[in-house]
Image (cartoon, rainbow, N blue to C red; front, side, top):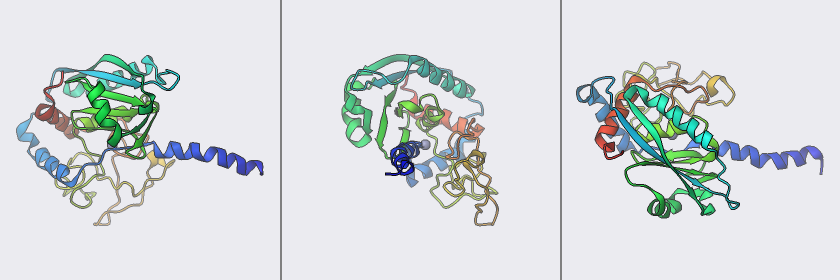
Length: 272
Ligand SMILES: [Zn+2]
């Protein structure tokens, strides 16, 4: 067999693996988004800007060991992750504390399938009133996910994503945020005249046409060109933690912070 073909055969699975485990397993339903739209529109009357929650939340990391008993992630990496979360959530005065590390001996959980593994794992390991973060080798279901989260519940992450931006993105979901491109009522317009009733429901996040324009390797993985119904060019929020255009993300917007504060007040005050 020619060497070139042999190399392609060997490298293809590695390439494929890297591609499929780079996204997120969260997807809001239309009814969840519609509920968000209503809450976001009433935000100004519910909550002052820059609400300071002044709460410290406990994180419990569940690290699934491999068949040799190796964790596959270091304490330094986890501490770095917690430090990043603390920096990003500071504007609403939420801080996170690494409460405990739980090493899970059952290596079968390293090939994580949410529909099969969630029931047994949660009953055996989750700690009440904390944010549980499960670290596994690979998430097989939801397919292609580097992580996922449920609202004011728990997070599942692939170990390779711990030092990346994924934990921040998933914590955003835990605090109720949708992706910037999700919509329950048609595409958000570039001029954002329908921003509170379509798209992610926020008016200070630009309309996001993902997957249109997604070109890995282009600036922030976005190639300009997609247009909206008015023939205006999309300029998506390439810097926002909740977009799928990567790797230039670095911020949440004011409305996203306000909404996260509201989500905590409505659904998360049991956490400690
Ligand atoms: Zn996501």
